[in-house]
Image 1 (tube, rainbow, N blue to C red):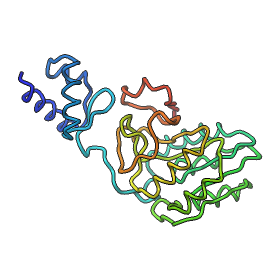
Image 2 (image 1 turned 60 degrees about the vertical axis):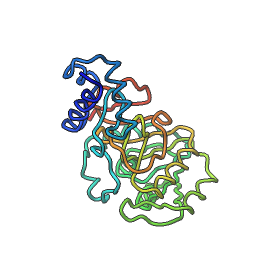
Image 3 (image 1 turned 180 degrees about the horizontal axis):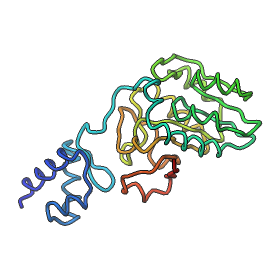
Image 4 (image 1 turned 30 degrees about the vertical axis):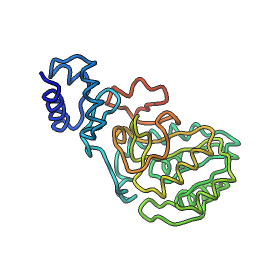
Amino acid sequence: MLGEERQNAILSIVNDKKSVTVQELMKILDISESTIRRDLNLLDREGQLMKVHGGAMANNSGYHTIDDEVAVRKGLNRDEKLSIARYAAELIKTGDLVYLDAGTTTELMIDFINQSDVTFVTNSFSHAKRLSERGYTTYILGGEVKAVTEAIVGEEAIFGLDKYNFTKGFFGTNGVTVKNGFTTPDVKEAMVKRKAVQKTKKKYILCDSSKFSQVSSVTFADFESAGIITSKIEDTSFKVYKNITEVEK
């Protein structure tokens, strides 16, 4: 099979299946692993598909440029989010200064936090209210209100983060890939996340497994820069990464 013919066949398979592993392509086309990987690298450079760890995805199959409303996201994968939130809350210890990012999974953490003498900083007005009601010393960043995600964003919020050095931080994300890292649709919200990650010693990304192999418009942190707490991942290509913790429902 000639190179161009082979690459067209790979592209056809990827577009049809939306995502495919190197092993699947080897079996379907009866081609060596090195040849498949070389072709995937070429097609990725040409922008015809997106190469991911262990395989490839069709262009735009997992890209998101708009945030869903909080009310919609709260009902998605709730059992998984509860397990993730419970596990994450147990990582908080007495004396911690914690950054709690806006998001539906980070919000679920609040009911499971049982340590005393913990101080919280957040960019979510709903998180701040619930934390304060539970008796925790809580600070909220100033800035622009983003109603869709109930978050505070913008330059003022970024400047407000400069004074802090967090012992732990818990962040939401819209997408997770090895190549693109952790991504979110809105540039203003991404910049706040990026700054908060930079100011945090121990960083944790909370996301259910549906966020893997998804990409949004703006990257706020590299894939291996934080621990990932998630539900059971079906894509076995992620199993090799030591920064991923899978929790059961």
